Length: 201
Image 1: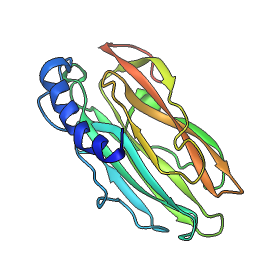
Image 2: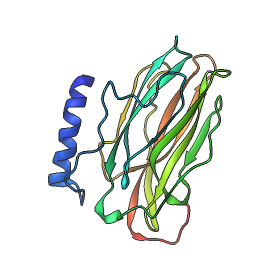
Image 3: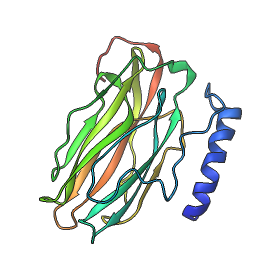
Image 4: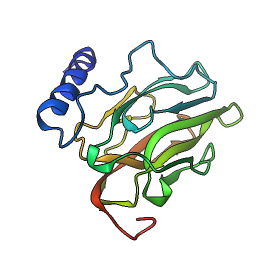
């Protein structure tokens, strides 16, 4: 399926899911993104947060070797299940340094609701922070990692979560000192429908 068709049909799938099979999702489209909606220019920092009560469900990126081996980024958000309720607190996680591999999940069982990044010319890479939101005392379970995005360094990146029972909790990344690019695996989890006593799972 071409990427153009994906961008046409994804909002329709989200609406149909919300109407007919969304397990408590309200009838509402996610915060959409498009080709001209990049949140950053190459070599510039950015801060992106989903609207209140929504979490990141898609990540899109294009790579430019001539623009400092940097990427432009775009995100899509969608409301969480009504069973989770409203976020009880949100925060920025610790910074993941440029030029290094890293693994991070939101602390306090939080879900990823945004990204913040700053570019460093000296290493041709970015540092990253997750914006996380906690929903009462709900806990993650049945977690798994996506495949690598992009599939190869330097390629375009399109990660879309089609299973709205799973939420992004973090990521692990590898960094190529040769290609000056990253590959990402996103950590996806289901969340309990009840409060639990574990503060960080």
